[in-house]
Length: 416
Image (cartoon, rainbow, N blue to C red; front, side):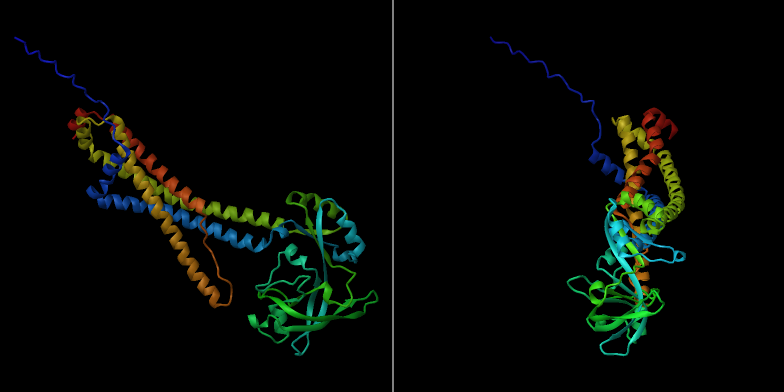
C-alpha cells in the first residue's frame, strides 16, 4: 500500500521593501489639500505673494534696462562706431585727405562722412522753409549712427530720398503722418566759404523716404551725397566703424592722439547697463525680503503640520512605512506647496506687469507716442524663479521631515 507522503509547505517569503513610489507619495501629499485646505491654500498664497513681488520688481528692472539700452542700441554697427571731430576751438574741419588717411588704420572697417549746413527746402511746390540743420550724408550713416525714421525708411544709393524730422516738417507747414511719404522735395544748401560768404548748391528733386517723429529732435533734414550738385569737401565729423567691438578702444586711443574729440555709443551703453543693473539689484533686494517672510511662514506651517500629524506618523510606521517613506512624504508636500507658490507667484507678477504695460501703452498711444513696455520678464528668469520656489519649499520642509523620519511608533503614540 502506497503511503501518502505530504510535501512540506513552501517557505513563506516576507518582503521587507515597503518604499512608497513617487506616485504614491504624490497622492498622499495632495491629501493635505483636502484635510487642511484653508491653511494649505493660505501658505501657497503667501509664497505666491513673495514670489510675485520678486518677479514684479525684477521685471520692472529689466523693462527699464530695455527702454534705456534699447534706445541706445538701435543697430549692431552703431555699437562698434566712433564719432570723431576736431574741437571747436581748433578752428579746423576734417578734409577728404584726412579721412582717407584714417581709413588706412587696421582697426577701421568703414567710414561714413558727416557734413552739416543750413538749407532751404520746399515740398510739393509749397513755400520754401529754412532748415537750420541739413546733413549731407551717405546711406551708411543711418546704420553707423543708429538713426532710423519712425515712419517710412532710410534712403540708399538705389533709392535716394530725404529723411526729415517732425520739427522740420512743421517749419514747412506740414503735419506728421504717413501720407507725407513720397512727396517731392526740392531746395538748396549753403556751403560756407573761407571768406565768410556762402555758396548755393542745388539739391536735385527727391522724394520723402522717412520721418523722425521725436519732438525733441531739432529741425533737420538728411539728404544723400548723390543729390547735391557739388559734393562737400569740408566734413563736420566722421562716423568710424571698427572691425569688431574689441578694437573700439585701440581705435579711440589712436584718434585721441591725433587731436580728435571722440564719442562712442558703447560708453553710454556700458554706463546705462551699470545703472540699470544697480536698479535691478535694489529692486531684487526688496523682493527677496518679501520672499524671506513668505518662506518663514511656510516653515512655520510645516512645523505645525508635523506636530499635528505625530499620531499619523506613528500609524504609518506601525503599518510598515520606512523612515525614508515618512521623510519623503513631508518633503513631497513641502515641494508641492513651494512649486505651486512659485507657479502662481510668477503668474501674479507677470500678470501685474502685463496689466500695467497695457495701461501705459494705451495712454502713450493716445498721446501720440509709441507703445511703452515697462515690465519685461525673461523666460529663463521665470523658470529659475519656479525652481527657486520649489527649493525653498524643500528646505522649509527639511527639518519637519527629518524629525518625522526619526520618530518611532511608540514615541508617536506616547506623545499623542
